Image 1 (cartoon, helix red, strand yellow):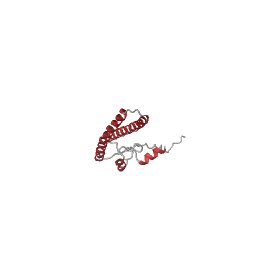
Image 2 (spheres, helix red, strand yellow):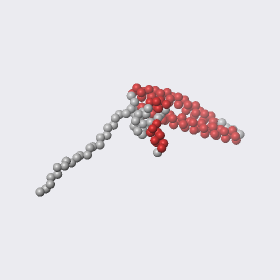
Image 3 (tube, rainbow, N blue to C red):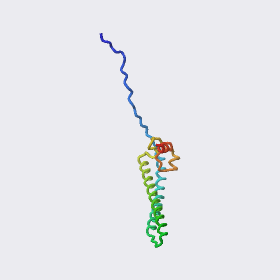
Length: 138
């Protein structure tokens, strides 16, 4: 006689992934968009001035070796400053794209909202402070 199994086969629970939409309201995003547009205009002016300074330094010609060395150092500083300004502008443009995509203010590491105070202090922030610190450790 065959034994009949009375134990039920338990089905494994299926993993359910719930994704809640995280993000700031349209009015908050609009506020940051206006701040960024103003910062971009300010940055564009600074880029223009820095670019002119690099050009001016490049046009200076001197017969004195010491002046030439000083001019070379000034040119390197001005060029580095210009590069930093351009990088910041690109970061602002990227932040504007995130506003358009409604992902601005969402931590790229944890997907949590970056505190609004942090965003006001640093418009291009992409992480929470905790995530940034954890990223430095690794």
